[in-house]
Amino acid sequence: MRPFPRAFHVVRRSGNSVAPHPQHHPGFPHEHDGGDRAARSHGVHGGGAVSARLRGIAQQTEQIVAAGSYRTPDGREVPLAAAVGAA
Image (tube, rainbow, N blue to C red; front, top):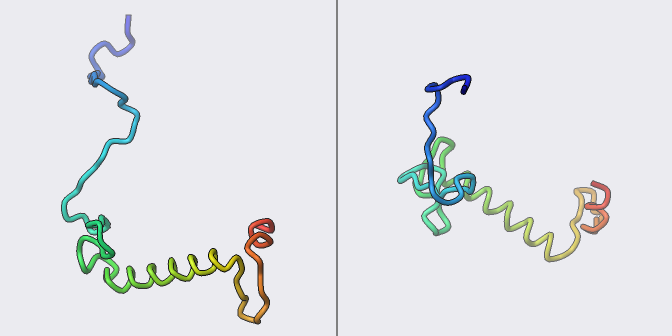
């Protein structure tokens, strides 16, 4: 005898029900339209300004990775391998 005979409805699906399913929410402010900009120009935090700031950070990060090192505010050069090893 099952402890809760009719308390839970079982849904049977074909395929892998645990695998992530694609989701599409039209006009959702954090979705991207495939271009460089978010789907809407102004979201909760101003949209354009936040995206431009994050794009700038991403470009700086790419430059640091390409160079293999970065400079601290006091002018010292820190190799990425040493920084990652210390972390």
